[in-house]
Length: 257
Image (cartoon, rainbow, N blue to C red; front, side, top):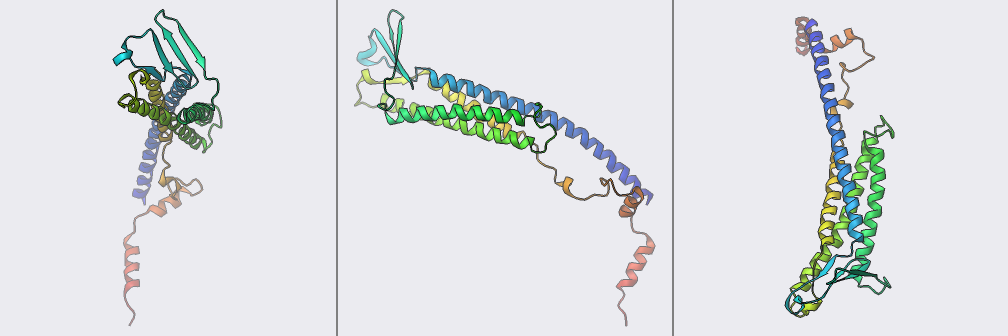
């Protein structure tokens, strides 16, 4: 029995060491949450700029259009003309309903991406461990995971129209039927859109991965961690079988004649 009690003390010491490791793990988890949240916020900021920029498509200077005094660029909400004098004039689309279907879809998806990312930022703030919202609540990490999942959804809604426009620009650029004066190149806004969607996706993934897994041993009953059990009773639970116990067990196994 003394050996089992010594073993119990050793288990308590190892539990203390585990608690120190848990504190370090929580600090790492807080750092990951902050990193993911900042990346996702950067993605939201870049997505907003991408949506407002007018240079999703810029005029290409190839063939007969290499000598021109005016450069054109098109965005989701306006088109601009840049003259050789350095003056840029932009005109907002007069009617959004007369625009091509792919452009209308891009407007809707980018606007939805911004709205969803804003919602995700508010949800994630309540789930971050470094904030004062619901301190000590067991569901706080789950709220952060939900915010990360919503950030991922916002990143996907930004990634799809950006990649679709890049595909359309490249398809028209290498189409021999389309004249050179009607061809466009990939604008800076599309490159920024790819980066912003990647920031949102990575930030959301980090927020989802920062939630530590639950310890399966925490739900199992153990006399070492029971507060209601007396220490002597715990020693009895963990005591090694004596010779008398073994002899009594052997007698019970002998068949009766």
